[in-house]
Image (tube, rainbow, N blue to C red; front, side):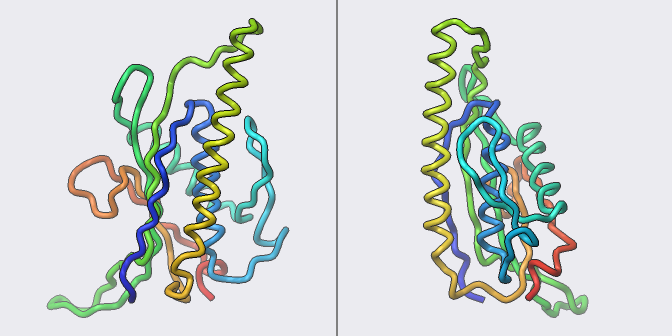
Length: 206
């Protein structure tokens, strides 16, 4: 197995009301780009739109993938953030791709998880209340936040696509993924939550 490829994404700052769907979009996109099989639109892939931002994106058409991502993003907001200032919190997510490698030990055969690619995403969450009234100042602020967030999403997605083209020659034929909250692949004591994605033979086994 080749050395692990680390793919750090730039830190992004998002308002809380846009953060869940944006983080889900990023995770969906990386997993889609790493699916080790030929995908068919409508069979494996479906288009979707974000509720508050422009753009049409694609994701895998598998309920278990969406459920896994939704659960981990929810856990991230419950346990993965630390306050660093007024109305501002910080956290990170990692998406690790790994193979299960049979090994021998003094206690007999066992399986070792070997990570070959790790994506990391540091996030700042702005919890300043969103202005909802129809005053001119509130409309201007909502539009400003929307335009700023749209650019942030476009920039990070462009970086995801660029990084996804690196290391293609070293991808194994079969693998799984974990979503880690806290940013570390191996916890040294912190808020790490790993979820093994199971039940994906038609996608992650070729």
